[in-house]
Length: 428
Image (cartoon, helix red, strand yellow):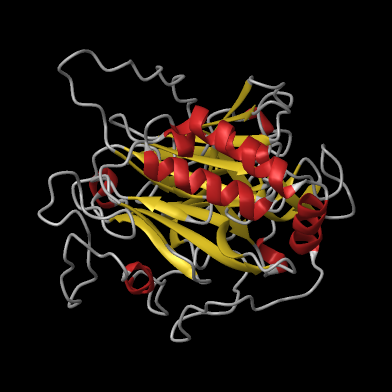
């Protein structure tokens, strides 16, 4: 981004052209004008002029002795930007002689933002008509279990960070990456399983992260505020990213314990992340055709194998029975790839995935699961689980078994309500 600063008083200094890295310019006027040539912005590339107005709520400034019109070191109010915002100027002065004086107040630094247009409310996905081909869906959740875009179902029982899906060509090279963090649980009753404890989605330079601990949402490391009041059960709030996509948050389940984040992308592509705040498990659905998809969810529909391999890795047989942990390990996030999670956690490559709990302590997750298991009659739970999972999965024997195993491992009957278990799989 190229920034030039000049003053508005005629007959003063000529225009100064500088890069965003320097920004040390003499400003003698009562009001500064910043000229931006957009080179990497969500806005259309063009040359714009922005005026530093300390009274504007789209500016932040560092003033002298609280002399600014909006108080000492005022901050911009970006909540007014429903469609998100973009920083268009970031000016700092280190030489006292260069500090501008506006209406008797000196400003040592200022920033100017511009609101982005709010994207239109996404149209609901129309139901498939007879003869039409529905958009493919790949997903992961529960113990955890995964289903590729080609319908291949498998389970993975290790603990590490994994590439769920990646598309380098998404949005003309902006790129899309989805990572999941699996956590191993070896509880005191002898049940050993893994589950997805966090998920992160990167679109260009924007990263969304959801934690299974409480269903919290971070965008670029900060808590995300929604435009409306918290949704009632079954309702939805809508928030817009700077990246230009819309996100809906809603609650589901008999007691509203499933927090849902639906990210609506272009061309019938969407990502759904659901957090069961009782069992503390995440479920992730990826819907749409991604022509170069790779990761645990495999190659696009119609790929010769239905599974994806890293470059230079050996190709996979379609039948990976007994070798799914090896397939999962192949998609561990490498040390040469971006770590999308705010917190790094063992193991990180080149340390391999592990197959027993790395923290067998009475932490929040362990205590909650112990309370769940202690509060149920196992024989009664087994009977109820078979009924609930049969109702949820119908004739799909694979998803029915996945559902039953997960309910018995966690002691949470409401887990069967998640749409993940409704999905149909083509193979075991």
